[in-house]
Length: 392
Ligand code: PMP
Ligand code: GLU
Image 1: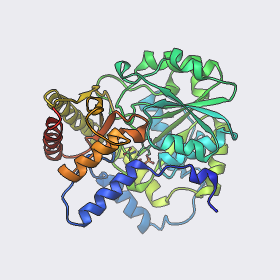
Image 2: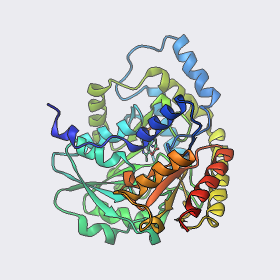
Image 3: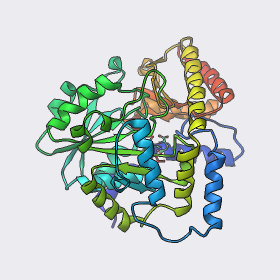
């Protein structure tokens, strides 16, 4: 009864763990939740006020499928001023979150059987979205010693006549790796020369700590033409529940993406669009302050981990995750999946929630999100240390 496509789909591990934590909390258990990647900050007041005003002003009717013009103008302005890429408002499609942006962008690009390069470790939803739109994920493993970043030479052997696109997440979820300008150029430009499209997921662009973030589309006019930029307000403005994302691409593609969206959701909530516009226009300062706080947390964690036996980690240069290498436990912990077993033990015995690396295609790792209070981070690290010490 259920389609093969749907049967082949794994549920979202990040959202699944979040649901499990919530249900344990409902039973009265106190969990320190460093699992889901959701800012612990609140949506800026200016955005909340704009959302309320939208309701009071009866902005509660259908709007344009590609999103309201003022919001698309605000996005175009942001892309020009912050990312040095010029898009007309008509090149932008506002979506119900970046997930939806990825889904309709891939629907616009892929014929059944087309291949999409997905660097490993990957964010949980990429392979599932590619499969849902009848594409074929092709996984290319990044090496830990290179901070999991890929070079063109590593990707080239995986290219076939069916390769249509690559999904790049910069900064990366789950590793926190950041491709800086030269690395990005060296990877992307030859791929574009070969005709590939780049889906550039830049949702963590504001969480970069060790240098300047560079948007793929700013590399050259040719790269821009082959890029579908994916971004949103979830992480940058702490607006996860408002569900606003967007695509920016060359205009013919943008038209198709907008048309697909018109059939799927008509357009994202008009109230959320107003709130997102206000956040983009008036809350930039708040966002900068948050980056500094994330950086302090990251530095604290990396420093603490030096004294935790059996865990090695790569210093992340962006996003709000640390990817913990627990391969030292491989011969000690029994079970089919090391990362699942360790996460389960941490949750059941120490009330700390992390995400198993297996969900990101890397079973030797756990993902820790530091989008949480310093107090929670400190206590969780202490408990992780106690857990690790028992194996030494
Ligand atoms: N891309 C990445 C890399 C993410 O981590 C997430 C998780 N929020 C998304 C996209 C989806 O974000 P949104 O809330 O806008 O759907
Ligand atoms: N992207 C976040 C994460 O990786 C939120 C959950 C989700 O959308 O998958 O935790």
